[in-house]
Length: 229
Length: 399
Ligand SMILES: Nc1ncnc2c1ncn2[C@@H]1O[C@H](COP(=O)(O)OP(=O)(O)O)[C@@H](O)[C@H]1O
Ligand SMILES: [Mg+2]
Image (cartoon, rainbow over all chains, first blue to last red; front, side):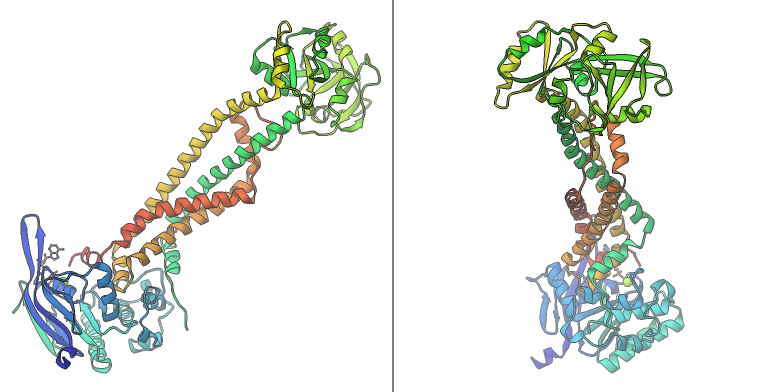
């Protein structure tokens, strides 16, 4: 029991099959893994190896074809349990923060409004920390009234990270967060993720095909053709 | 800095993203709101104006020589051509009926005046009985002067607009073209907002003499006893030889049926305008949803429920429609005079009063309709947005 409570994620035999006409693509093939709370895990592998598909399932953005998933000991998917979109939403907003290769900031809102946007839909009880603290932590506190179009790529990704953090998630999912950035900015984003993990105890799952970036994690999982290599 | 952001602000700010598109959509809704409120105002104003015209005639039944009923209708309300005559002796026969409270004979004469306006025009003279006519039309007010001094005098009482047009004062002399007969203006009527404004009244006997119509009249107006049976009276009057009986109720029906055709047409235009505006709204919002597919997906990954997204998009359509509605209604109030003129051109007979009566109540009704359009046209785009799955949107870019 106490051991289980220590686990952020527990996946058993996850399989995801896409059907494209008659063809079946096994994007994730019988993957089992566990992630401890406070762990920093990176996923590495060539393009098309199933990294995004896997992390989306772990992050409750997608359903599995088969297998089971527990989050903090609670079953989300199993053979006889598949959640509705609104149930998934409830888990997502309690547990996860997401960042992606693209930043998806709302161009008509200022940096500050973008960061606060999740509160328009949901505000966790424990999330009422000063947003400026996060902005300061990410080094974008001087840019709050700017529009996204006035920022550099690195700054935009920091805004996206701030937005992902505003509701104090337990787990941060980052799918190729440096894919649109040069190597200097990539290193900076990597350092931010590392600091968040060490200082705030945030569980981080990082997908990348950059081995150097993957190296900052506690543990690196290699994927090949949907399988853990 | 404790600024907050809510769904409605996000919706509003999104509309500023494509200002031209938003502006054009609002304009489209504005135009249809304008058409709609003007038509509702017309629907109300026209009948009121027509009723006022008819009440101001002072009599409820008109007996004329046999002719076309439409002609008779216009004759009554406008004065006109195609005149037919009856013998004066018919008056005694009409008076025999107990339903008749008062009776007044009229002789309409029209003559071409080459000096009228730019290319000449028709001058109409209405011969009226100096005793019975003023009594029946007791509501007529004088701006200057009064009725004729003598039943055979060469005198005229001129309607407000007729006097204004020719710049006449009491005491002025006027000439009847062709006949070369001069008469004196003894009275000028105050504006009544009816056909009387454009008429030149002269004593019946005088008109009969000038135009060689001694013993003849064109019409007899009957004021009916309060509790009399109109249909019965009409039937009795038809026993007289070669007459045409026109009751005001009938005139009103005739005109309203002519107008209803125009109304159907005009309401179809309104309906089409509304449909086009609706399609415009759906198109604009749907496009903006599709453009923001990924953004909406991210919003959902932030924890937005389908209903949150639905409300956000719905708010956008409602903002568009309300803005358009307010603008359209504003235009309608500002331009009601011009709309009046446009509508007058479309109709067979237009009463003298204001055709379009719009007020704040009608404004709110129109705003309600426009809001309904907004809510209705927002459903599909909002539903499309609500069911965007975060995954699809993130994936759709392809990596
Ligand atoms: N929605 C989908 N429909 C069909 N096939 C898909 C879909 N998404 C991903 N795939 C396929 O699944 C495999 C894994 O893709 P992905 O998880 O994106 O890999 P990675 O992120 O490692 O590049 C690829 O072969 C890809 O073409
Ligand atoms: Mg990927």
